[in-house]
Every structure is written in C-alpha cells, then in structure tokens.
Image (cartoon, rainbow over all chains, first blue to last red; front, side, top):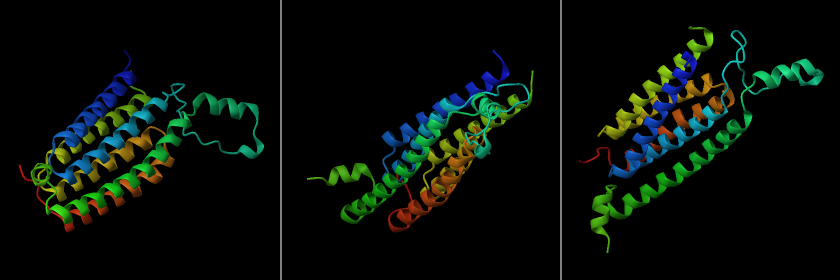
Length: 135
Length: 87
C-alpha cells in the first residue's frame, strides 16, 4: 500500500470516529442543546464523506488534482478540456453538499426554536426530566 | 516515497485527527458554552479539510454557516435557557 492511500485511510477512519462520537452524542446525551450540537457535527461528517467520495488523487507526480472550475471557457479547445477532465475532482458531490449545508442550517434553526419553546413550556431541557413531567 | 501529494494528504489526515479530538471534547464537555467553542474549532478544521479536498466553493459557504451562525444561534439558546449539563 502506498503512502497516499495510507493517509487517506487515516482520514476516513477519523471521520468514522467522528460519526460514532456524534451518534453517541445524539442518542445518549440527555441535554437537548448537546443533542443539537451533536447533530450539526453528524451532518458535517456526512458531508465530508460525500466529498471524500468525489475526491481524486493526483493524476501525476507533479500535476495536482484541481477544483471543478473550468476557467477560460470562452476560447475553449480540446487540450484544455482533456486536461480538465483528467485532473478535476467530481463536481456532483460538491453541489449536493452545498445544498445540504444550507438545508442543515434551516433544520438547526428550527430545532433551536423548538428547544426554546420546550424550555418555556417545561422549564428544563433535560429529556429525563421532561419524560417525568409528561402526562 | 513522500512527494507533494503525500504531504498534502498527510496534512489533511493530521487535521482530521485533530478534528476527532475536538469532537470528543465537544461531546463530553459539561459546560455547554465550552462545548459550542469546541464545536466551532471542529468546524474550522473541517473547513480546512474541505479546502484540501478541492472544494473551495463549499468552504465559502461553510465558514459563515458553521463557524459563525451555528455557534451564535446556539449561544443565544444557551443564554435564554441553561448553561450546565447535569449528570
């Protein structure tokens, strides 16, 4: 196994670790604010996995992979297009992640106001106490 | 052998390890204000990882949202509710 793949495995393993920690925070932490913080971390880690799927290693020793931005498209020729296709990373996961970041912001804002209303109604944000108060 | 590509991905992997440490601190911290600050540190490292994964457009959206808006909104929530998480 070459060194770049080894480093990529380290990156993916730490992302899996982050995912596990965020899931632990969402499921086992009793405080609702901590659950919201864990949920943002969970969403960001899922976005990072999408970006890792779209990433490509360098095509050559000295030619780096590059962002999926096609510059100089007004006078485009075949060699420029070939160079772009052979070195740019996948733009589709990046477009999806861009949408997911904004939707995650909206969902987090909704959850924050829900937590605020729960606090105004029950006087606490601890789910164990809220469960005792029910009924 | 270690070339420029290996150095770049090595820096990214190192940043990912630091982000795991920041996530652990954010999840286990009892003071919620400190937890939000650790979460913001983790988001900054994620923005750096996105930059290294050749996604500069996502970095432009992600930095204001995850380093600016998330901590601000959650800090407002903590200010209006409780600061400490009980055992």
